[in-house]
Length: 174
Ligand SMILES: [Zn+2]
Ligand SMILES: [Zn+2]
Image 1 (cartoon, protein in one colour):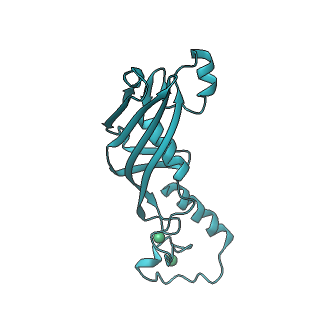
Image 2 (cartoon, rainbow, N blue to C red):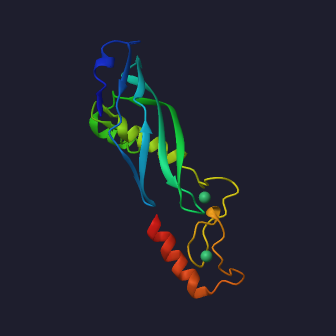
Image 3 (tube, rainbow, N blue to C red):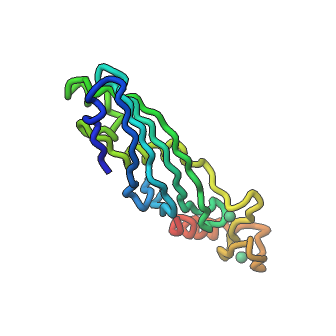
């Protein structure tokens, strides 16, 4: 959703408090597409700090379903977004494009709320997701979820050809 930033430019110290719904239902990154199973509205506080500078404060809560790194079962992973951004809308158009290169959530005089939140989720994306610390993972022979019980395979030595199949299996589930 786009929020107009021109209203807050009306005069210095002007503050606008508003809410915006998130439009995205999935979080799409290189490593996959993850379902957003819960999302709050985004609470926004826009403050005119003078000379066309705006402070944007955004808060939101999301829950994203991410597969466990070991057993691939979905894990509801919470993100609490609380971010403050300073944006100068006074720069002339071409300078602004350079300055805002990484601020792709500003489109002209509009704030793209989804893009802002997307960038924050990306920054906070966990290196590792486990359903539980003691997750036993999947059998590297038959692919059974070992948290649900022993599959009976002999995993003492892993045939390298099976390792390849396991990798294909893992990749196809992501
Ligand atoms: Zn697990
Ligand atoms: Zn097995």
